[in-house]
Amino acid sequence: MNIHLLFDLLAYGIGAFLTLRVFNRKKNYISNEDIRYFYYTIVIFGALFGAIAIGSLNIYYSLNKDGVILGKSILGAIVGGVVFVEIFKKIMNIKGSTGAYFVPSLTLGIAIGRIGCFLAGLEDYTYGIETTSIWGYDFGDGVLRHPVQLYESFVMSLFFIYLLYIYFKNRLYFEKYIFYIFVLLYATQRFIWEFLKPYEPILWGLNIFQIFCLGLIFYALYYLKKVNHEKL
Image 1: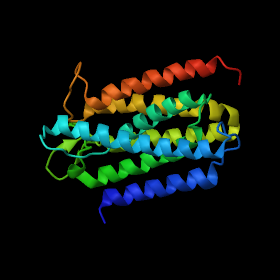
Image 2: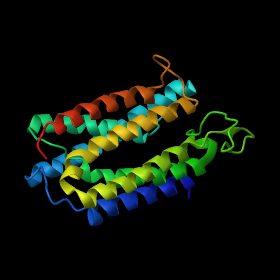
Image 3: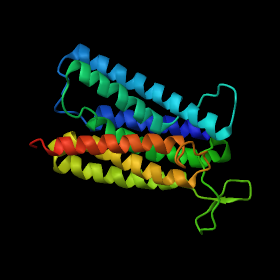
């Protein structure tokens, strides 16, 4: 079995277990069962659409390919999920954060999945640019590169510890804030790591992932400010 696929399956499996068995939602902003299932369908469709669309765009621009080449991206999945869900919430007049209990599985899934990206080597096209630092890693072509996959895995692992602390200390704060904090942290660290990747810049010296990261950062800051004005 492909090592990357193995780690993806491991990440998805642990994520599903956390969502269903560990982080049980006590408060649900979507009381209507039919609407709730429709909401989950929107989440899945939006995430899949975003993952494939943005991942494929990056492959097209960075590899300069003319054919239709499909890719996938966790950043794209987050963007797609956020956009589709926010539209759905607006239409259905659903207030408040509904993504808190997705965060533990997302966080740990990313941390584990990035290890799979690292072990997949050059063919995964998630490695960093050349470096002379002592932690540079040779993926098999004789060039020491930034192991950016491990940088991201480390950050998300630390965040997982933080969200556990928040979950057990203040459940209400967790439900209101943690999703937006997650989006802000993920987008910010991803924006930084992208400077260490060999992707083609397309606007203002930024690659396509960084542009979407900026959008997520503004989104998270807006909603954090909005929620902060509400009484906990």
